[in-house]
Length: 128
Image (cartoon, rainbow, N blue to C red):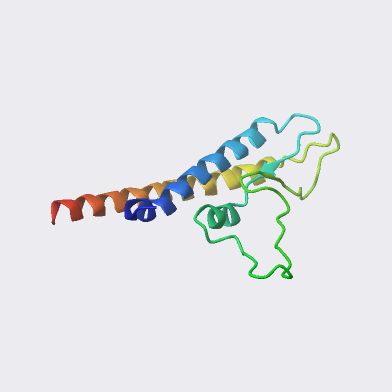
């Protein structure tokens, strides 16, 4: 991996994961009235760590116990509802809207960070 990739990768991965999470949360909101629909979410922190290479623990000896994940990386997990509905739907609209708003704010912040990194890179290339 070259230096430019290392410089931009964290923000690019964060944007990609935030976008994926926004799609999942949007799907939850769209299916708020669908019977037996199970709300899902993406654990951003663990996905981000594994995407930038900080999340995996490796074993150095065959006798070490490996760390097992509950689901494959990049896959959404089901959300545990506070008060599930009688029709089996686990979407709680107020929770989903709050998570969507927080994710949108974080997406905009990550976009600003990436923009600033690119601006700094341009400035360095111009010799300013």
